[in-house]
Image 1: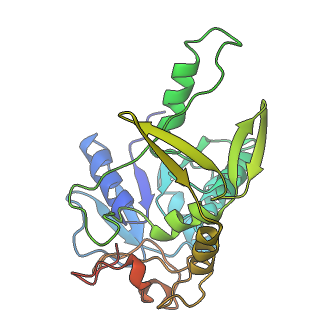
Image 2: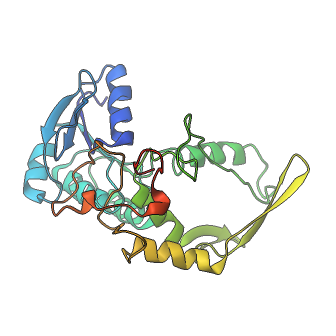
Length: 270
């Protein structure tokens, strides 16, 4: 059954772009957020809602033939559980391993499709890797390295970075345990621990994390005082005027971001 009437939850950078892309495919797109953004994509319908209200969320999902959660990693699971309950196909671009594992567990008994990690990486990069690996004879492929990165068209701030998605989710990636396959077995290792040698145009570069780097990021993401306030489990730093999808009330989303994540020229979150 073709999807014609999807609901996108969360109108941040990713949700907004997805709404435009699906609209261009001829779909009747609706977006849900706590507050309507100042610039809603043309032709996209808007409904107000809060993902923490499970009963209301389930009732809303029943009106659509698919739901895509474009929320931070710590909010998507509630949407997945509601979609499972009301038998609506579910998709998300999350990078969080625990959320992905929970959604996959739901999918085992779900009457409808449930697919997490539908973004670029994870997502498309895995499909590309599997396609390339399938071209080798069985038992001949030793390893496959794929790197994914995005350079902003207009770099800002000291890091030259662009905050196109939840920076809380980005920081979370740096402190969460990493999944890998080593010696033919799936394993987990601590983050920011290993060293890698990159060779670019005959130049050798050592990519190595200092032990203190992990502690700095860990303290930042746990909301300890680092020149400001940031609780990455709830506060979602963003550019001024950019609302975030279905953030719970309480003012977390408006907390000041640490100076190292601030664009010195504009005062915006990177």
